[in-house]
Image (cartoon, rainbow, N blue to C red; front, side):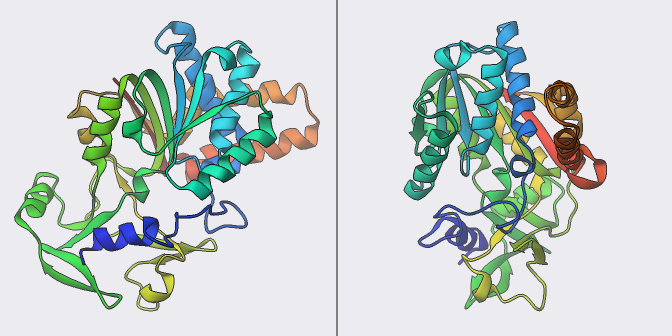
Length: 328
C-alpha cells in the first residue's frame, strides 16, 4: 500500500497510535509546548483577548481547539481569559474537535477537574461539523500528524510486508513536486481538504497553530519515530517497522508553504508566520511571567521561568517551532 495509507492506519486505524488517549510529557513518547508550561496557553489566550478587545474577534463566538489531547491548552486559555475578563467565559462558547470517544471522555474528565460544572464543552467529530459564525481556532502540532507520501528520485514509497519499497510516482505527484522544487522528502496528504472544510464550516475565523518545520524545502527526509523520548529516523537500518507499527508515534517536519497554499486557495489570509519564540513574546508571555512573579514565591517563579525558557530559547523550542495565523 502507499505509505500515506500505511501511516494513516498506523496513527488512526483500528488500535492505531492515536485511537486511544496517549500520555504526553515525561511519561509519554515526547514533549509538547502545552505539556511544558501553562503559560503557553495563557499567552495565546492573551493574544485572543487582544483580538476581542479590538473587535476583530467576537465576544459571543467560539474558542475551539483541534487535537486537544487531554484538554490542557484549552483549559489554560479559558483560565487566562477569565482572569482578564470573567464575563468572557459566559459569553464565549467552547469546543473541541475530536472524534475518538475514549479521548473525548478523558478531556471531559480533565475539564471537570479544572472547572467543575462552570465550563461546558461541545465536542465536534470533525471540523466540518462546526458550522458557526465566528471561531478562534487553535491547534498545537496537528499538521505533522497528517499522513504523507514519501518521494525520492521520482519514485514513491509503498509498504509491503513491513518493508519500504519504491515504484514510479504518479504523474500528479511529480507535477506537485516539480512546482515545489521537491526531489526528496514528504508530501502531506489532506491539507487542502482540511482548509476547505474549515472555510466552509466557519464564516469568520482566526486559526492559530504551532508546529515544527519550515517554509523552504530541504530535499531530505525528516520522517521519524518517537519512542519514550528517543528518536529513530524511519530509514534507520536498526528500526523494525513491524515492531513500531501503531505502538510508537510517527511524524515529520511540516512544509509551511504547503499549509499556507492550502489555506490561501480557499480564501484565508495569512496574518503571521514566525518562530514560536517571536510569537509568544509578541503575545505577552514575558509580561504574564512578570505578573506571576508578583503573586508567588521566588522558587515557583524560577521554575516557571525555566519552563518558558524551554518554549522560547532558540536552541530548544523557540526557533524550531513556528506559528502560523490565518484569518477568514
